Image (tube, rainbow, N blue to C red; front, side):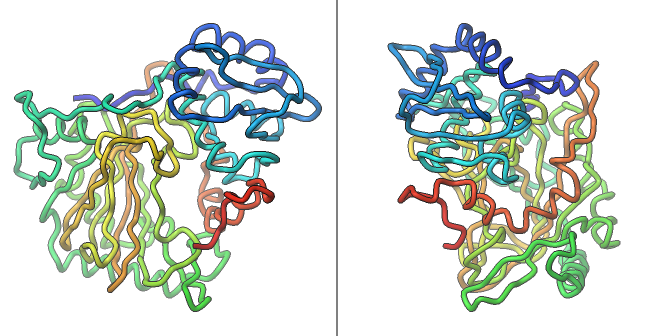
Length: 413
């Protein structure tokens, strides 16, 4: 029951020049998918978007029932200025609209960040032929054709075909009682140890600020290398069976991150808002992988449980933030110590902020093998160093936004 929806080969990525994009790539895409993309713009009620690279700009807008491309500095809703290499990455889905903002590669001079990232599904419709999600596009059925029970949980002995089908339909799984409490206590002790060792800008942790202005370490990067207790769990058959669940050949990525969710965080990447793991880009090269959350302490409504939006992995919708037109309804996965959650890399999910007590969790993932004939090369924008630099990403998003727009992004809550 495959969840592999990749449509591009990484070996085909190349440096596209600005004029090639403006004069060839975009016109050809409009010729093929202009009506599909135009429908998405109308449905989402998006303003026109202007792409400016150095001294040249083009504007995408709807005319009639199709997307059209205009040249020059005509007034528009959103203006995004970027270098040619950023435009190349955007066009080839190597970075998304939000991914460019997160890495300081785009600057909005009109409109705002929400309008800019609202264009992401339309870019994917235009360039990859993916229909922008509309109300009613996604329905849920079990193996018997009946309505799927989205509140269902599974244990390790349940039918694997049913689990694979649920994951394909809903985009997530809640697996109960996978690991023992003493195993979780050992992993939790390792998280505590490395959180205590963390220092700002050490390149191995993320930090956030609480309501009292205190900076706190909230995430240990490269945690699998640091925790022998976690390595034992990850190598155990109780975890590794997930590689065979969908038949797609998923492989563990050999990495993990240990998280604490403190109370009262007001700035930073602790309680992440709605997003997809492909939200920075590369959906068409990587989805769907599987991300697992190992519940070290358990999580409920007062300790910041994981939220998911069932079916969002089958919806071409905003990958960062929750589209106000999205009809799919969220669920909170309340877990006990030793439970494991699984979500597809294209499933919208979030970390609800804890309000009474903190929690601990370990995230790790299973990726797809390269497609036949593909060649995968290291990408510095997704390196260990780039991962560490995300600790201050909210400031970079704010800097990328249009500071004169009243709806501009603010790094603090």
